[in-house]
Image (cartoon, rainbow, N blue to C red; front, side, top):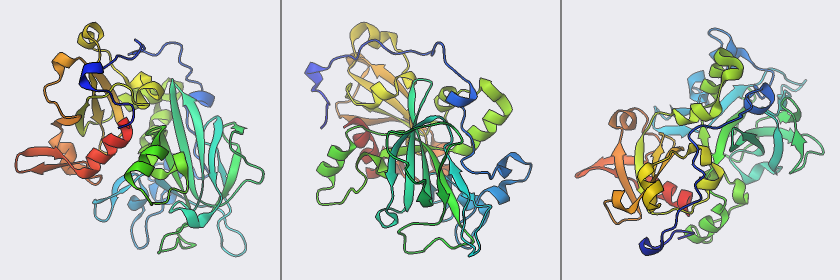
Length: 345
């Protein structure tokens, strides 16, 4: 599949495996995320209920990131920020703003083509990483906004709304912007999707939601408030709670080039050459640490192998269903295998 190599022909990547990033800019424009609307009540003590909006009939907690839907069994890969302004008809009309400096990566102007409704994705370069923010359920994009356009943090990109293509429509009361902070899973997603799901539509190409892996924005906002300009998104990513580790016999997948700062050095692999990677995943499947492994360190022969599981995390944050405990112990589920395959294609 993809660029994977046979065991006898494995090659190493160039030795660009930093543990420390030098000369990193941590000013507000390049490394700090702003709230995407004027609703900043999350910063107030006890302000969560005014900031988040929950699903129909549920509390505000179901508008948070993570295992917050269906009694903890369903993942919500973003946060739902409540509107604060309405027009004469009661419809939301809050301006939605770029959360950080960047460029427009994608605009979906057709509500019926996605659960996200009308949505916009922005690309940001932060501490050596390509980071993406997503703004969904918009009423409309800003007139004239186009892919490739440069933006500053705070620039208006659209109007908050309640568009979607789901069976249960978003009511006026629940109007919100769904906001995500993501990394892109694979530059070759379109090809992978076509091969693995022949005949299934992919209306958004590379910008399909399945190709974006999210991280909770709330701790980022709170860490920024506490740490100021010393906040590092890279260190925040590196310190995720581990769900599991998988070993892949592949050394050429695109994540390695786009997310090089997340790679840790391994003297054995530096000396003997790279035969694969050990990848640490958080509960949402975010690959937050990658360690090159030499052939002498790889025990099994399968292309993808589960090497360890944090059982406490698996039991408390199992909504993504990436691992399960079977008769012979922990194993990757089909969802887990699919995630790793799409990452390494």
